[in-house]
Image 1 (cartoon, rainbow, N blue to C red):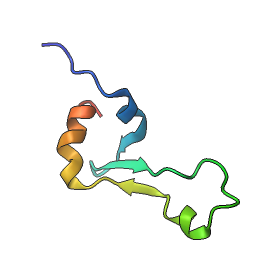
Image 2 (image 1 turned 180 degrees about the vertical axis):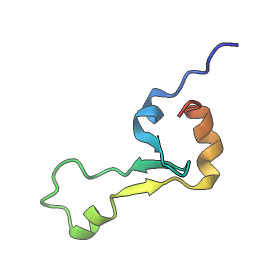
Image 3 (image 1 turned 60 degrees about the vertical axis):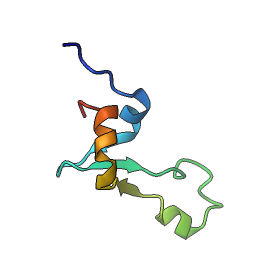
Length: 64
């Protein structure tokens, strides 16, 4: 049985936490930070993916 290919875009964006949940970084924290409000920067931290998305994520990155 051949291996399943991982989605290369999802592979770069997702990581697995120690407890087995999926986490990703939100957009908007790379550049032009001086003109962004404090609230906008605060809301752009890492995010834990909801459990309802796990089935689709497992098919995108089966070996993560």
